[in-house]
Image (cartoon, rainbow, N blue to C red; front, side, top):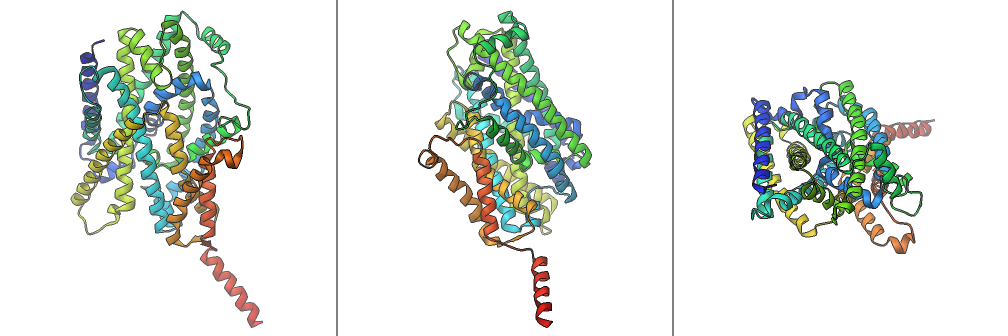
Length: 497
């Protein structure tokens, strides 16, 4: 298909997004941008969050990884279900009880200013790296199938796409994203189902027949029972639960939309509905990966990993499906980037600059500051995407999960310490502890052959990181003040007697 036609489709899709943004961002305020005026419909939020949770990485990397890991991603998916239930019934009640706009304000109220700023800073670092890795993956594919042939350089493609995202998030923020994510999730899921249907038709297979062939070729294996393997099933399940607990429950981007729902009960419905949809959709992505690996050898496709999906669709399937694939791919791209820029802007404005608490600034000045921060993050996204272009990993989902292990560990340690203990912290030492956990993990991973023998670290690195930070916080803590007072009173009473 002509690259020029594909480019026209991209422009038309973006025009539709702008129309949605215009309709939803009229009379928007800072409250609309940060938390959607606390009036988002939970059904829309649940459905739209599917696109944010999956992103272009899932769309491309999960099918591509089936050739290497089979249906092993199912192990992590089981953990996801456990994690979402924990977020719904442990973290959400806490956030609603405290009436939070930024979830990191909990750390401020419970542990102090430095813990608050440390948590917000690690979220910024993690979301910056994770979102730009996701953005790079999809931009790179768009570049390969459309823009290279038109002579458009990679940096210009990235700049234009970020400009598009800015245009529809600049004013409305969360209020707009709830609606655009719903549109984009619909397009992505339609593309997924269409690709499955066409591949089954092309190979003249039923669902049952295709699963039987996948089983014969070892593509449908789920559980890894070798304890030393990074993919050992218990490690994967436990890690999946902690990934959701941190990357959803302790992530401002995901919680920003969830707590924009008016009531706790509806917010919990949102999260549990999201869980059910994700189980189905991720299972379909793994099934699609199996179909791609069945189809590729017969069609002479030699691409693998992240490049397989696009190579099969754009080189061997009908034009109609190529168009659907492009729209689905774009739909997978935008939710991961627009929500990230919006959440990062909110975190800096609320948690680091304290704009919502400042009485010396007018509402108009606060809007200006917010818009400057928003533009600044767009520029930073451009720089980081270009950096990922230099690295060019064959599987970005592995890169993203690795980044999460290092950057969400401190958040896990901070939140766990606040919720599981009643101790108070020596505030000035908190940033050192938060940084120390990831550094020790890096040392451990780099020297794992020497220190651990044949055992290989996998996603459990996130939990190790959280435990190290928790232990460090305990070391710089002291009993709660009320307990100190009770103890002193008891000592005083003993002396008097």
